[in-house]
Image (cartoon, rainbow, N blue to C red; front, side, top):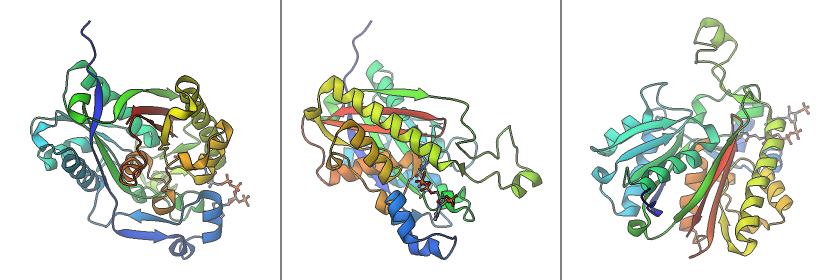
Length: 329
Ligand code: UT7
């Protein structure tokens, strides 16, 4: 078997919509308070896409930023992967629209529907393609317009989520010169549709007068069960990396921005200080597949990547599904 090509990250990009929806704004919409939201989640505001913006608009802006960061032309991209559960439409894939608008004339593309784990799963697909030599440059995007599937009559969900997009270009380590891909994981416990899902619109509950009346096209969530699940798998993922590489090798943990308390509880279980984690949930809420790549770019801009140290990205969400990506910067 031919030896694997070492993989790195050539470029990082992010885009968030202009409009901010603060906790005080939400107080006017549902029975909630800034105090409750900040104490229970750490969120202060989130971004909401403009009416003319769709998921591919956000994804395109993040992808363009990643290309600029990598000093790479769009026609050098071989594959566009878009992780999203709020694509422009059920099909065709949002990745195809983004590839077209980007000018990625040689690329193929498809979407990955893995909710909050989408970006870390797509990253592993991208790394595999580059390692094998099948593709040289793979654009991985996580993009969501969750505001279009949120029920602004349901305070259990609508305060938690926001819109945004992030992107990373996986290429050979030789070209990238940074962000060596060390590996990752993909896990699931199926049959958990009742805990976190958008029930309507698929083959189980196709769009109908009834499905609309029952509000099945909006996200539904049993928050406390998700909370317990997230703390457990987040702590397990981090513990494994600590056991394998040693605590002192970890430079920064860039977790799925799910809830400040979930991140604190998991870090505490593993015995790691909170300042090892990069957090931006206060400004964006949970942006599902977009949360890790937005945070990754912001951690990079904040100088949090230490040369030679590990960058760990754990993610978890609907499925239930979870996994991680590990880089050496
Ligand atoms: O990427 C994965 C996606 N999932 C998530 O991000 C959610 C993960 N879960 C969570 O973040 C937490 O479970 C929540 C923040 C959703 C809730 O926190 P909690 O500590 O699990 O809830 P709690 O037991 O402290 O509070 C629940 C109560 C309920 O009232 P009753 O039934 O006890 O009277 C809710 O009705 O809090 C009420 N509640 C609210 N009150 C004010 C729920 N949402 C709100 C709200 N404002 N927005």
